Image (cartoon, rainbow, N blue to C red; front, side, top):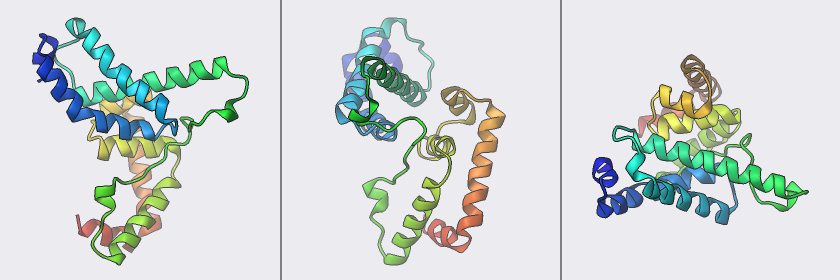
Length: 187
């Protein structure tokens, strides 16, 4: 699909858009509560790939490429806003140190109370992790990105990325003990 798109196929572009627009939006919501800013950045991401498609590489991990492009656009837009405004408090955003984790509505519709309580406990414990660990876990397990790709996005070494995942999972295991086990048995 990507190769067809960069060769000029507009239907392939529409398919890429449909496939990834919600993924980008969900990822961007973890960085900003400003709906307009987020929608603009998602739109700009797609406009840019359309505009520059002739010069784009034919072999890319599309999900990784789009997520990292969106992240750069969001950070640039937030930084630009900060430079233009004297008071940051009037702007609705969540800075990069507060990556919030939440499960999608589909995943949150759990059949019984015990599972719902386990999921809430897991989410609460995950939100206690440092922002960087939460983002790495999100990219690894929700985004299905490889450690190498996450390391590039987070500007850290691959070994540091692996260590962060290991430490986060170890901490969650220790804090949740039997609770997470019951939750994970249902998936």
